[in-house]
Amino acid sequence: MVFRSPFPDITVPDVPVHEHVLAQAAEYGDRLALVDGAGSGTRMTYTQLVQAVRRLAAGFASIGVRKGDVIAIFSPNTVAYPVVFYAATMAGATVTTVNALYTAAELADQLRDSGARYLVTISLFLDRAREATAEAPVDEILVCDTAEGCRSIQELMAIDAPAPDVEFDPAEDVAVMPYSSGTTALPKGVLLTHRNIVANMIQTNSVLHMGEGERLVAVLPFFHIYGMAVLMNHALANGATVVVLPRFELEQFLDVLAEHRITRAYVAPPIVLALAKHPIVSSYDLSSLRLVLSAAAPLDPDLAEACARRIGCKVAQGYGMTELSPVCMVVPDSDDDLPAGTVGKLIAGTEGRLVDPATGADVGVGETGELWVRGPQVMKGYLNRPDETANMIDEDGWLRTGDIARVDADGNWYIVDRVKELIKYKGYQVPPAELEAVLLTHEKIADAAVIGVLDEEGNEAPKAFVVPAAGAALTEDEVIAYVAERVAPHKKVRRVEFIDAVPKAASGKILRKELRAREARVRS
Image (cartoon, rainbow, N blue to C red):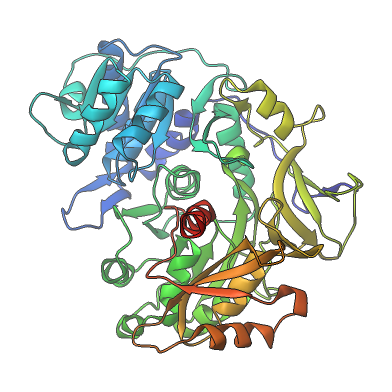
């Protein structure tokens, strides 16, 4: 059974990413586009943004950047990040965005795999950049600020030359190549065309309506597809003001929300958790907030409700993945009476199916199955991995997400868990996310994660890694009993380990592979 978006179909213009994003800039003019929220006071209007992009694109062309080259950006969020991104695509390059937390070895792996010719970074990251490029050489390292021995983007922008005139095939030319593990553990370059990115911006307009007067806080990293697509591309294409932060620090984040009168906060679940539970939140005036939208990882419905009640605004969810450019489903701005736990409706131009992983048969409303998605946002494929691309996307264009989902009669979708992460306890399926949601309702638990481990009988059983709340006294038996009272017998947590912090990616996803590695070390 094919489920279709309830929103009208879209027409995707045949233009590259930078052209679409900057198309309305003349109209926006002196409206603020970007603000440094970390204290430097740097501000950039839409007119200045366009001028800076065009000058840097000319500078890139002057040093030899040509269509098809790959430029890697290794940087935290800065006001300069979007300038580098759009200037690179304007010069015809493909951008590969690199996790700002990467070690030199991880950076070298991505530079080598992507075939990057240029690396744009900041002076603070130069030690890692130089170590990485010793193993995976690039033509040149450029910096967004200043550093001895490196040219800066400001030097390139000072070059007196016109912006390059590059011919694009938006449906084929790759605009950005972020890295994702997809449904396997090995990071792969995800080929997203100009058309993929532009289509997803237009599709997202069907559910999220931004414009003049909207102020966003960009605390999610631009190197991650969520931050890149929603806080950079979608926000700037619609004329919002984006207040940029390089990392999440709760007090600084709250200062920005209050001082800049932020209207929309796009976040991941750990930030929702902080907003719901941290005592300092009550000291801030957050009355300007109209929406907190969480994505990138499952958000417990009770946690969402607690956050909404505490800060007095709508808390909703969206769903997507890098391979979908990334948005697939979002709770529309117009939906105020939300069913608990929904990640929203299919955005315009998107189709969905639910497929039983065991039988391969489609299932219907109210049933659970692996979510398959089709639409113009589906990636072109994985870089140099045709077999993995074929395993991910079938011949009819359906992308297998690896997520277990269901849909109700009103078209509201719910993500149950990952196919790979389901724990099989004596033949029963146990979703880790469900147990994590239960654990987070305990007043003495600040955070938690669940994985499957082998018990004495050789069964895969749920184990909880628990971060106690500050000053809380908590025992393993107390945690086990708490969960047992709230779930079916086969879902009970069998073991508990107390830890200082749950390992998470910058997007907020729990890094279960690190917990599995920790468990393996203990057992060995």
